[in-house]
Image 1 (spheres, rainbow, N blue to C red):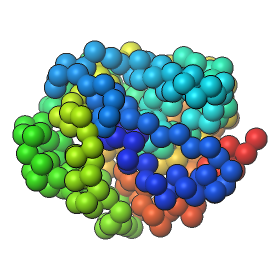
Image 2: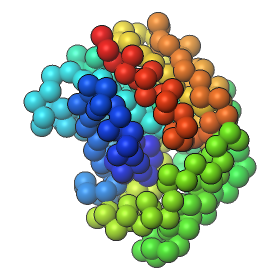
Image 3: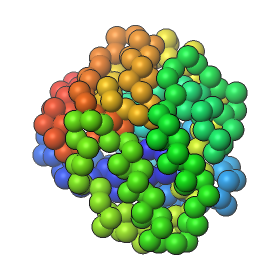
Image 4: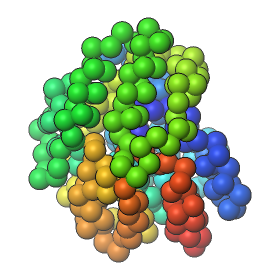
Length: 266
């Protein structure tokens, strides 16, 4: 899943529909989320390359040689890194609402140093930057405040077509908060991305069937990020979610799930 998000963001109903299509679905917590290991706030000891190796370790634990890798946002970056660093473990790649280089997003935010990454891709909207700024100074031990800020972020990330999908409400974030070992550490993903080596120049050598899925109303990784990713990976396909922001609202599942099942059918 994406930055700051545990495996719960992969909604059970979505995973069940993929499973009904004949897929064995594994979702897991990235470092610093949910039930997995955590670092002190602001001190991640890992990069995206390490998180890609984590995904491969999950496959090892299940005794799975190769898998279809699907990731959203930062998870889409991890998806790319698995394809680049562990190509023998990936059958297909599906990066959703992701980017070939997060530089525009990192440099636009004062919440963390970009690490010098930068491409000519669109930055986040001002509303998103305000929401990120609010999270930077948050008391992560205050359950009600955390839930409120997360709800603010969900509303800011929504596109124009489905402004209130309703699937990620207060009950969801309360359950996510209560499940986490150290909820504060989820904010470590920004600096972890910033500390990662740029990889966009390597994508031209990627030889794994890839489906890029992106909303054309995305306010944090705007549509040109998805277009750039599609252009960078030879032979990739692209599915545009019209009017969709940085989200996977339920109304688009009827399009997205069949597309993923078709892409992973070979």
